[in-house]
Each structure stands twice: as C-alpha cells, then as structure tokens.
Length: 291
Ligand SMILES: Nc1ncnc2c1ncn2[C@@H]1O[C@H](COP(=O)(O)OP(=O)(O)O)[C@@H](O)[C@H]1O
Ligand SMILES: [Mg+2]
Image 1 (cartoon, rainbow, N blue to C red):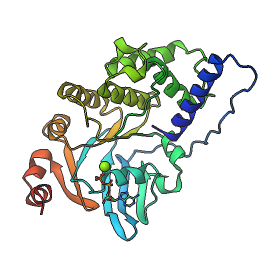
Image 2 (spheres, rainbow, N blue to C red; image 1 turned 60 degrees about the horizontal axis):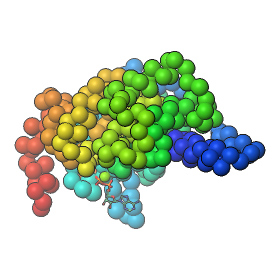
Image 3 (spheres, rainbow, N blue to C red; image 1 turned 45 degrees about the horizontal axis):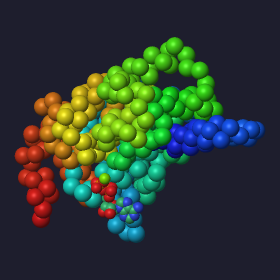
C-alpha cells in the first residue's frame, strides 16, 4: 500500500470511530498533496530504467551494479534465490531505499532518485507487498472507494458521494479481481488470496502506470494462483508489471512461453531470456541447486 493510502485509510477509520461515538466537532486534518512533477514520457519505449544501481548494508552489497530495463506495457517476471536483492530492488524503485550509486528513471525524464516515496506513488508506481494490507473492518467496496479517493487527493472520507463514472470503475475493478459478489463483505472475512486481490484492486484504483508485485501468489491456493495469473495478463499492456515470484508454474503461465524473465543473483542480473532458456542455463541451475 502507498504511504498516502495508509494515511487516508487511517483517517477514514478515525472518521468511522468518530461517527460511532457520535461525538461532535473535531474535523479531520486535511493532508498535503504533492504537485505532480513532469508527465511520464515513454517515447523511447522504456517505462523503467535502472543503471548500475548499488545498495550496501554495512559493506554488504544487496544490489551490485544492477541494470534493468522494463518496456512500456511489459509484464516482466523476476526470479532468483532468497537474498538475491529482489525486494531491495523494489525498495529502490519506490524510494524506500536510497542507492549508494547508479541511476533510476521512470520513463525517460523522471529521475526517481530525486523523489520521495509518496511522490513516487503519486506519479504512477504502485507496489504490492508480500503481506496483504487492506482495511479489515471496512467492506471490500469501501476499501476500493477509499483507494479511489486517495488518488484524487480529496480529503479522505467515506461519506463523499461517488460519481457514476467512479461507481463504474469500482464495478469494473470488482469484476477484474473476482470480488464482485463479495463487495459488501467485511474485508477481514476474505480468504488470504481474496485479500491479495483486494489490495491489487486498491492499487488499480489509483491507476498506476507501473505495478510492482512482490511474491503475489505466496500462500494462495492453486486455483487462486491461476486466477491471479489471468488477472495480471489482463492488466498487461495497459499497465507495466514487474512480478517477483518463486512459483515457476505461475511464472510459466505469465510468460506464455515467450516473454523475458530476469534472474537476479547476488544483487545483479545473472541471466535474462525465455523461462525455458534461463532454466536450462548452467549458472542459473547452479545458484538454485546450491553451491
Ligand atoms: N535493511 C537491511 N539491512 C541489512 N541487510 C539487508 C537489509 N535489507 C536487505 N538486506 C540483505 O540484502 C540481501 C537482499 O535482500 P532482499 O532484497 O530482501 O532479497 P530477496 O528479496 O531477493 O530475497 C539479503 O542478504 C538481505 O539480508
Ligand atoms: Mg524478497
């Protein structure tokens, strides 16, 4: 979840509490909105450009001169053993971790290393963490509504009336994330997989250009995993997706036999190519089977 969304959620929950207690006065503080820096420019085809990124933790290089290009509309799977630097890479892209060296651009003009975490979220980079973070006490619908409004920068409240267009968007998203029949359910009662979908739906309400998904199917049933792959394939093209995942069956379904897979190891790209090719790559086999 984005920092803005977390703030908006906390505020909406506080509003709920206030209503419940039927207390008076105390209007919620409004929160600041960051001015959008330049528009995203993908004229050269790349939505994300990482070059020579190095991140050190006490001398240990979690990322070691990592270079990576993601095309506009591309669905890229990233695999690699534990500790390869996959999550750290997402931390760099989203502004959570500052690299010691290197360059990171969103499109050809937006320098990510000059932006703060909430600014990066606002220019269209959405991130899904491993653990689902939805508002358990709110309904599925309310969670999406909240995400939609946070995007507009409107003072977060569940009591603003939605326009017809906004209702349509929520309806389409509910359909896409397979939660149409659960709209009025309390999010806390959903299955683990359904919570993951809801969080993806919340990200989609903010209409991100680039979605970063860290182990999105961990803990899902086989059927949920398959449906998640269908969902990502439906998003491909309209959005760019970077998916970190260990589940090779899932990666196989996403890459459809031809898309590029990137293998990370010790903070750099070890191999890149079609899944079948990287799986047959000796260096890759070696790092997966252990030294
Ligand atoms: N905040 C941190 N402080 C120290 N070491 C870290 C920190 N974050 C990650 N690391 C180390 O960096 C390496 C890469 O971690 P990570 O990016 O989480 O790998 P992956 O997601 O590929 O499993 C690991 O060895 C991890 O222990
Ligand atoms: Mg990780």
